[in-house]
Amino acid sequence: MPVAAGAVATCVAILGSGGPSLSGDEMATYGAAGRSLSGLWTLAQNIDGHFLPYYTFMHFWGMAGDSEWWLRLPSAVAIGVAAAFLLDLGRRLHSSRAGLAAAGLFAVLPAVSYHGANARPYAFAAAAAVISFWALHRAVTRPTGRRLALYGASVALLGCTHLFAMLVVPAQLVIALWALPPRMTVRHLLPAVALGCLPAAAFAAIGFGERHAISWIPLKDPSILLKFPKMATGDQVAGTLLLIAAFAGAAVLWLRSRRPVRDRSGAAWAVGAAFWFVLPPLLMLVISYAVMPVYVDRYLFVTVPGLALLGGIGLAAVPWASLPGLSRRPGLSTAVTVLPSLVLALIALPVQIAYRSDNGHYEDFRGASRVIEAALQPGDAILYGQSWLRTGFRYYGGDRLPEDVAGIGTAPDPRGLGYPERADLDTVLKGRDRVWIVWRGTKQAGLDGDRFPQVAAARRAGLEAEFSWHSAELPGLTVALFTR
View 1 (cartoon, rainbow, N blue to C red):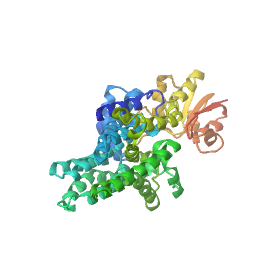
View 2 (view 1 turned 30 degrees about the horizontal axis):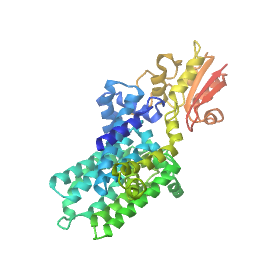
View 3 (view 1 turned 90 degrees about the horizontal axis):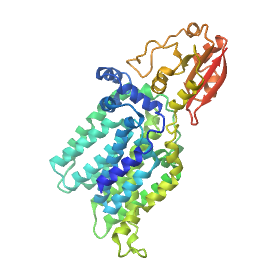
View 4 (view 1 turned 60 degrees about the horizontal axis):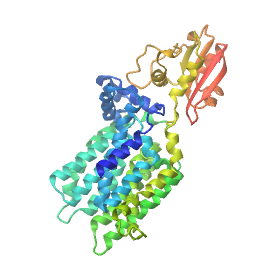
């Protein structure tokens, strides 16, 4: 069943993955992966250093193709791996039904489809989190040197996927210290944890030196925690229902640990699995106030498997077999266990459809490029409000774009994701009658203020906005045509 569940989850994630335009973050992956290994090392020393393992993997993966679905396929496979290990972990903690229900709940969540079709490392982080909890269960159930080493390796893998994925480790420590057999002591466990945390410590030091890369994140009010169900799962209603089911699953594990005999392991997993999704948002908020703002919805995706795990246990505890007509059909009663997953899928279906639209990832480079191509005339020029937008427009527009009058060469900045540009905009616009200006943000952000020097230079050159287009979501992309 784990293999089947993983295959289904991967298929759900990859379904329609070629529809949405690559987002700005995915363009960062595409642009970084297209560099040489030495170029990646230079980039990592200046920005996105903690993404170096993922970028290196995508460097080799991209050698076989660069279409949207191909760039997103590794994330879909990671979702399948997470579902497979989640099913087995649910079986170990409760029953096969619990594992099946957990994998089903996980597979149908909108956020799982989004990150499973997103060329970023968040699906890898979720898979590594599930693997590390799975390895922890094996280690505390029958501690051996090999199992402890496997757990330490899984923690190291977790730290290599995404730095904030390590926020689930405190929940694992609660489980480990609580559920250790009497013959085991902390000194048996700490070496594995310490060695496993070394990659994360190194990437944390690198990330702190490059913290300017996330300086755009605003400081969130503590009330943001009320939006956790939507931020983690992608839908407020489905997320709230899953959260309720997860707390019910934690109660099931706790009660099972008390009767008929005390079970330290069951109680530890009841609390630790709940901490899997409770602690990361709280710790992220603490870091935001103590160090710098870091609270972003995609960083919370690592908590979703924990929600699905306990939710599946809660559903498996329902006495489905006692329902009329199911008492003598155990196979059918097991199938009924996954029905709530189908209900959850129907509730979140509009969000699922939206994620697979052209603008499903909120920055429609494909649509913006088509707008320009449809009205392009000889002699047109183009300016970029943010230099890194060139990656997206060149990916979709190719040689059909207007002349890039401000760009210096075609290679990106070796120390960043942007491109070198000329500063003398007044000179490059001299004699131009039609100039396209594109930026990330709303129409008002560029047309009603002086945020973008490109717009100011166009107006100094005697040009005025004749046409503007904006993608559906915020901040989105804006395309404006300035004519004389």
